[in-house]
Image 1 (spheres, rainbow, N blue to C red):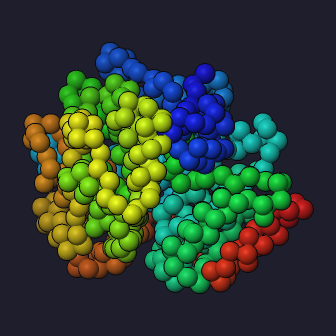
Image 2: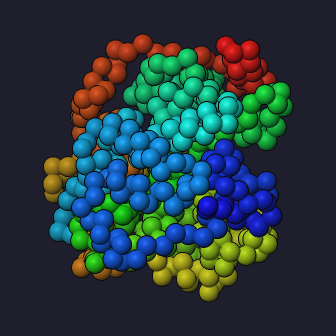
Length: 469
Ligand SMILES: *Cc1c(COP(=O)(O)O)cnc(C)c1O
C-alpha cells in the first residue's frame, strides 16, 4: 500500500484515504508519495492504444491501491471521463509543425480543474460512505476552482460544500457556472469584499475549526490535496502516447499559478515518461520566474490580471519540487520554508540545487499586452482562439523552446468563453457556449450575499450543517 510523507519530515505517514481527507500536514508541509511508482518504456509503449479512461486507471491505481477497490476505481474513472464533452477527453490541437495545444477544457466547467475535481468528488463519496462520515468543503474562488469543485461534489451525499466568491467580481459565465448547479448540499456565498478577504476567511476557518463543534471536518479542494495532482498526471501520458511517445521525448509548457498542474508533469517524468523540458509560464505574478531566472525568492503583493486563474502571490506546490531538490531532507526543507514564508528578506536557493532544476525547467513571465498579442498571433496563423491562460503558455513555449525537433505541447487550461474581458481586449467576439451549457444564461441562480465577516460566515455554515438540514 502506498504511503504518503510530509515535505517537512515531521508529520505521520498517511495512507491515500487519509491524505484525501487532509489538507496541510500537521508540520505545515504537503503530502507526497513515499515511493513514486515507475513504469518501464515497454510498459508505457504497450498503452499506446488505450482510450483515456483505461490509461487513467493504469496511472492512478498504484497511488490508491489498498484504499480504493480496483473495479470501483475503474467505475469512477469511466463515469467522470465518459461525461466529458469530447470523446477523446483530452484532444490535441496542432497549431504549428511539431507544436500542439492539449485541450483540457472539455469537462463540465470548461477548465482543466475538472479532470481532478470530478474524480475527487467520487473518491470522497466512496471513502466517506465506507467510513460513515460527513465533511464540509470550504473554498474561496476567483472563478475556476469554485465551479469545478461544486460540479465535482454536487452528487456527494456526505459532503456539504461552501464556496465564497467576491460579489460582483467574477465574470457572469463563471458566477453562473457556480450558482446554477442544483443540489441541497451546495452553498454559494457572495462576499461583499475581494478575493483576498474571502481566502483569508477560508484560511482562518481551516486554522481553527471550533465553529464546526467537532461534528465535522473541513476538507481542502485546492491543489495542496494530493488527489488533484494524481489525476493530472494522466494527461501527460495520454498526450505523449498520442504523438509517438514514449519513443520520442516531449516538451510541455504549462500556464502556472499554484504549480499543481506542472508538478503533475514533473511526476509523469519521474514515473518514466520521457519529458525533456517543462516550461513554467506565469503572468505578471511572477514569483517563480524571478526565482528560476535570478535565484531570488521574494513574495510581492498580488496583481489582478486578465488571467485571474493564475493570479497568486505564492505557489504552494513548489514546495513539493523543492523537497526533491533538497534530496527529500524534511528538516532542511522545513528550515528553507520558514525563511521563504517569513517574507522579510529575499531568499536564494543553493546554486547547485537550482542548477539541477534548470536542467528540466525553464520559465517566462508574460504581461497582459503580450498575452493579448499572442491570442491574435495564433488566431491569424490558424483561426484558433486561445483562452488568455493558454496564450501565456503558448508564448512561453515559443520563446523558451530548446529543440524544435521535439514536439512542444502547451496545456490548454481553459475555454476562451470563460474569459470575456481578455477575449474582447484581443478584439474577438465571445465564442458560443459549448452545447451542454447553451442555456446557462437562463438557468435559475442561487446564492447568498454576505458581509466579509468571519463570524457571520461561520455561523451560516454551522447552521446549515448541524441537525441534518
Ligand atoms: C488553475 C488554473 C491555472 C493554474 O494552475 P496551477 O495548477 O494552479 O498552476 C491555469 N489556468 C487555468 C485556466 C486555471 O484554471
